[in-house]
Length: 60
Image (cartoon, rainbow, N blue to C red; front, side, top):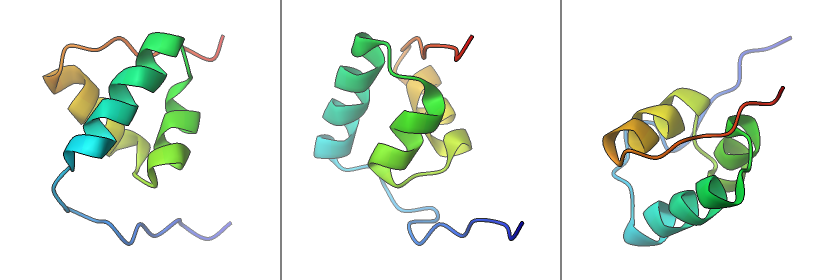
């Protein structure tokens, strides 16, 4: 399987993206789905969530 390429590599987060991340995290949406919704890598979402002290739901 080919590695996914993210067009948004190292781009700053917009306030809209941050708000969407907060909303999705509060709803209990899993990391993979949040990353897809924001067109960001899971690692990027994880870092931003940690910086904002958000809890991301586990898939289990």
